[in-house]
Image (cartoon, rainbow, N blue to C red; front, side):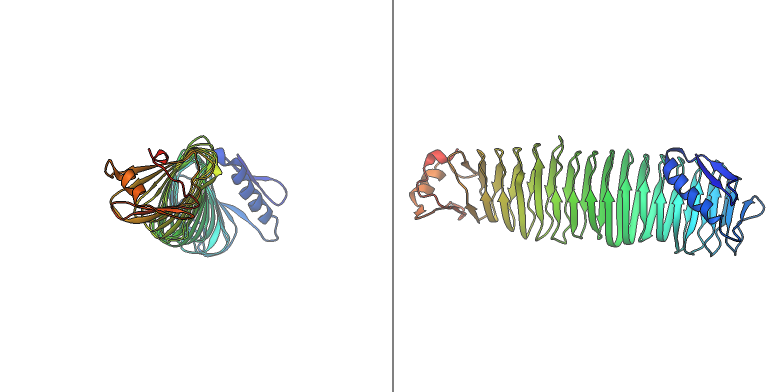
Amino acid sequence: MATVTGANGQVIVTLSVGANEVAGQTLANQISNSLRNPGATASTVAPPNAVPATGTGVFIQGTANQQFSLANTNSTVILASGGANTVFGGGAANQRVLADNGSLVMLTNGGSGTIVTGNGNNILSVLGGYNVTTGTGNDVVFAFGSNTVSAGAGSNIIVSGTGNDTISLTGTTDTVFGNGTGTISVTGGTGGAFLAPGSQNLNFVGGSGGATVFAGTGSDTIALGAGGGLVFAGTGGNSVLNGGLGSVGSTLFGGGSGDVLTANGFTSSTLVAGSGNETLTGANSSANNIFYGFAGNASLQGGNGADVFVVGGGNSTVNGGPGADLIAIVAGAAGNVTITSFNGAEHVSLQGYGANEVTRALSTANVGASTTLTLSDNTKVTFVGVNNLTSSSFI
């Protein structure tokens, strides 16, 4: 419940806001405080009357299935009918709407303010700078400008337009789309999340639920939570992707030059380099991770586990770490592979080459302080600091 009181502490209205009790009462307290100002008024609006076109004050709408507009001033509307209502924002600063468990359709035309809904299924389109908090219904929010959206525990769809929006997810299934320019900052919750930021940059911190991210053309900073997930970085490059720390693994795909992909924790993850200069690392992981570096210039760093590195075309540098790693070199695209930490526990597998490829390559090896093999597809493999390579290093 949320209760609004008047100047003398008398109850003006009490309404059910469902699971949004904290946010609802916070806004109710702000409204109550405003009613203590000299000249402040609270009035009930009922058909055929509507919220006045001018003036300020607190207006209580107690009749369902109404459509009305806020004044182009800092007015406040409390929806206490339990039914469906449509509200058109007036475009002023500090407009406030406190809704009960009925359904709300609200469209704003600029301005700023606070919108708190109950457990109904709501459709909100905000343009400007609004703080929006929804309940446990299945809500659709269109946010254009610089808004803060806290989506409730339903299945929600949020579309972020041009501007910088901050979004918190707590729903069972949440979907976030980008449709403009700017940056979307999203915090995940306990449910599953699907994010497609389009051309916008994405900052995402995952929660205990799994996340799927299909980034577009932006640059992204993503830290998956305990639920892990699947991430395709944007093509803008310079993205930072971090796998989760929980019991669910992560799959990370680089998108552009300058990306850094990191496997974390104790659960196996898969990291795939994109084009350009990319860094893939499992230095913070004790799991057995898989790293792919086929295109561009990929730097691959393993961790303490028994990692698998799959490389081919492009220029790849592999530092496997202390584990018993496997480095698979795939035939078909001449590239350069540099292995900087080859130890007695690691092995190399030549995939797609002939049966005698190892013997032939060792017989023509360039051996000095390091050893360089030239494979039949003209791929060059350098073992840094190794000058005693034998066939036992290959499987």
